[in-house]
Image (cartoon, rainbow, N blue to C red; front, top):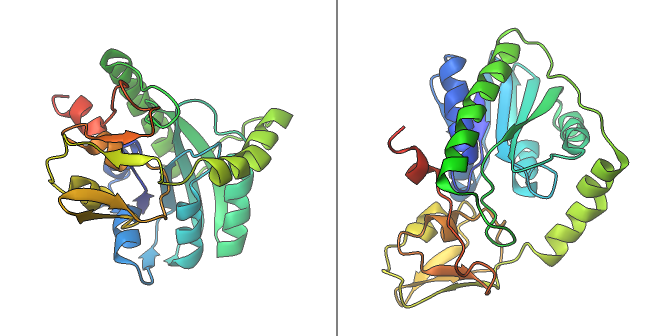
Length: 254
């Protein structure tokens, strides 16, 4: 059973491909369960596969918390796949600890390189580079699907001191200093379509006077800023002039 959490589509892209390769009926959107709230319970005779982006060298907190709160019956084997623009640091150690808490059998964590979407701090790559990364991601995903089909663990990667620091104290500082919504604004270019509110996985955006208002519990998934059809949303002055990244625009003709 494949689960995914996604802001601009990277994890959804990988999850849909995995579901196809593993002959699953569908990939389950964690976003939808977060938006709906309430308990979540699942039964699967096949391994559980969780696909999510990498936030500061770890799985997003909202995803870890959701997994810990959900009920899983049947197979206890859990695989983790993190989309990333670089390294996943020591994320595997935290996923393993999560499995111990949730009574799941940790079968490994693997990264899949995807286009960087974090316009709050960096600049997404150009379209050609994005397409190359997506092509490589298809190949990588197929290799991981083969391991899951055989129920073999993902290979372990060496972890450096820098990896431990990045996934530990640096990740903590990232959430404390950067993961907040006070920097998001909507310009007069806003067309009041409400897409940002619909896409927000935490119901953190509401429309007031025809413009989005952020309510204080953001996870920095970039769904609002990158999915705005009018490019009316900015994050402070950092995002101004930067290219937006939305996988649906890149893949619509592939």
